Length: 312
Image (cartoon, rainbow, N blue to C red; front, side):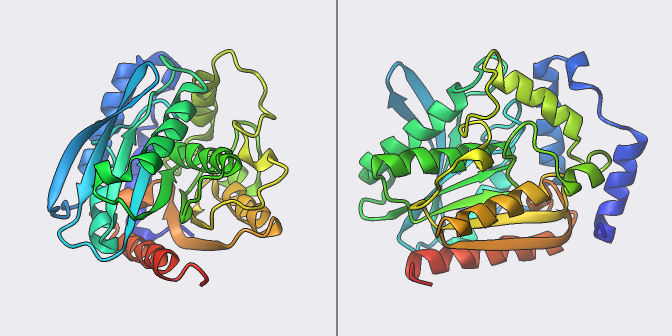
């Protein structure tokens, strides 16, 4: 059952359903996404500093933003990848969550502005994610965390990039403290009970997500490639310990639960945080649903434990 605080938001969304993404420009969609994100977020947590950074890799520059909390207790850096269906989202749309988690965890957060579709189809965004993580791992002192462990975190589409990057970098021997997957999308074609139940009317429209997958994949047609559909990766053993956050009323819920089960089957430590009554994107809505902040705080506690006591 959806949380009562979401009812007015969902009612308004159903009365004024989002336009078909194919009928508007990508610039209009991005501006609309940005406007909605800024309207729903709460007060921003104060930071000791906020720095615009660039990561130079190969023939391109990846923009990033470093959040330094007022006090630091845990020796870890979190590399964060925003949501937005591979098409929308930027450093500003998810700033509230990065600041809140940096404050709660007392860890530095580095948000990555990876390339978006349709201008930059697969695997451009994934390459940015992998290259950014690899660069930070090799240049930790540039980010003020010379001896710190690394956590990678993604939300929705960013969680897809996060878990794929975790698997690819595992094969290179790069050690991560954790991978954090916040209501991840794990493939363009997987149909589950939650996808059927919550396909429309719960903020994330599944048909619109399928459209965005087509934008993201471009001419790449192999949906069985585990870089596209991580649930189809045969061996996840040796992957970084995972924290998976799911919302009860999210079409993506069941595939995230299934992925947590797959990780466990492969011997990977997993903590599954199930938020009752919540919808996709709820962590960004603390100003509207105060209970969402409890999940943010719970997630921060899990990150602390992973860094301070990995054996737990």
